[in-house]
Image (cartoon, rainbow over all chains, first blue to last red):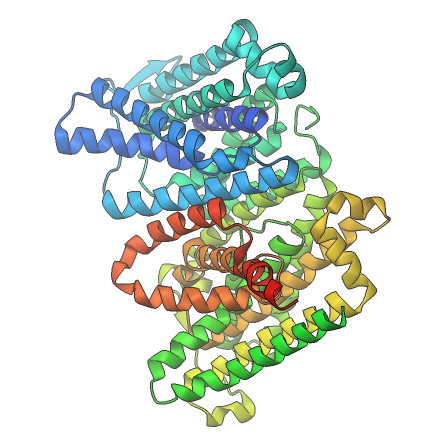
Length: 290
Length: 320
């Protein structure tokens, strides 16, 4: 097998895991709160821009800046959930979904505008101390391995959290049957906030991990939102497991498309690929019903 | 009922008179005429979006991309001399209509239509932007390309901006009149209003909701392609920034929500207000986007039904 092929595949897997981290938050928030968070990519950028500004302008040490960036993102998510989405929760059914989409879209427009005018140069790149390692005759970038392992570990953590802990089980029960969960005494309000915080935490980690393998620009929020949403749709919008599979599929396919037909056309091909997959498997690739 | 119908007819005639007379006041200030033409085009865009989102709840987040596809097809055809301007505009209309139909068909096939349409059309916006920049040798990339002016027949006697003001105004007035007739005087229109009010009940009484939705998407998208082609001819410079999400989608959404979704007069009212406000806040420059986002949030939280509904409820209730 060609060595380059393996490296591209590894690239794709890493990118796919990052997309899964973004999409896992989207899926959890949609499943529990009934809001498709179109500002999710902007949350990622809030974290990277916040960290970059603290690093460049205030000379914070890296770990402190990262923690501050994550906390900033979680704070924003709490604001979004507690204040902006308040009118949304008063509605039911399709109206709620529609207003939720719209509210988060407006918020993402606001954040995008504010970030690109205030901090147009806040790019975040984190360099690891060791550049490359030799592994079974291949020269692999350390960044790739580190980010891949980190994302996989986080995703396993999310999986265990949902399966094993009380809070995780409460979240799953609310997603599957809200009335039933209410009857046994699970508070929707509390877990809605928790899920937003968790989503913000995961998406900040995705941003940080992305900045180890590539540069995250202040204006790239919408792109991450769209990629995350495509993963969510392909994975079956309520299934975290499906999201991880779909993230890997899209990450690998997208990386190879970029290599073979170029960055710009890759999006077109990716969209066509997803349309075909959705036509064949209308309930997502792992086949769970919405 | 008679009274409501005559009120609507009067509103339509008043609208046409206002559109006809306003530019005559400003005929000596080309800048105002330019703003008015821009406003007329935005009303048209909001009209297309209103039918998709307001009436049938299909959240198409690719208004800018659809308008852009229309403008690029027409622009490229005219620049390279592939076909005459009329054929080019027709081709744009057909292509965009077809894309809109496909999107709607795919979404209707799945449940949770609102979300799927939203995600899918956002992806179309992204693909459009990448395609325009990626195919730089055809589209001129980031800087775009210029086309020469096209003859508009008898309208050529007018100053340049005024010509396109009338083109856009006539288009949007014709759309208003046709929509008005179809909605209130035909059986299909009755079914349509049922769907707007309560989709599930409409389905239960035997209305084919999916078919109405896909047809709406077909016609509204075709309308966006048609006006987009005109917009391209009007601006003569066809560049990606003109058709970006922030320059077309966001204004169209604000116009529809401010004016009143699922109303025929809403987009006209909203567009007039936004044109004035936009001029007044021009000094803000790039911060306008922040303001747009904030406006949308406030409108959604406190003024979701729009001005048209407000007038109908609070002011007209005095008369009836």
